[in-house]
Every structure is written in C-alpha cells, then in structure tokens.
Length: 112
Image (cartoon, rainbow, N blue to C red):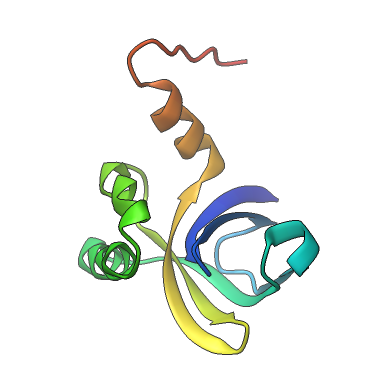
C-alpha cells in the first residue's frame, strides 16, 4: 500500500493508504476530523490538463489550497464520492509531499 494526500476533502487534506486504480473507502468521525467524512472511490492517473482543471477547481473553491500550484509530481486525482457527493480532487503521493515540503529553504531531506 502507498500513502496519498487528497486535497480539498470538505476543506481538509486527508491521507489515505491505497493503490492507484484500486477502489477504497475511508471514514473519519466528526470527533477526529471536525466534520464527518466518508469517502469512496479511486485514485487514478490522468492527463495533465485534466489534473490542472481539477486542481484549479479546488483552489477556486478554497484559496487555502493555492499551494497546490507547487505540486510537481505525477498528475493524480481522486474520483468518487465524499459524503455521497460526486467529486474529483487533486492527489499527491506522501513521498512527493515530503520532498516538496522539505525542499524549501532551510529544510533538508535524508533518504534512507
């Protein structure tokens, strides 16, 4: 299994453990996440233009996600349902997230 960060899930960034192309389900209670979240769907590779459209849609809905413009990894999206509503959301591998975060000035990254 691989960990992925899904952005824009009810205003949050959620980490899930799954594989690309494999259906999964995720639940987080209101106590744990501040709002109840039930997700079901898949993470899939898409063409870059589809990824950009999904990313820009999430940024338009919530400016807090403007940092998504820095994503440099593989174009991935989550496609499925969040609390019964059909959605497409941008995704980043946790490893890529870590590398991007730690590549900022003053940070360092050590590979095992």
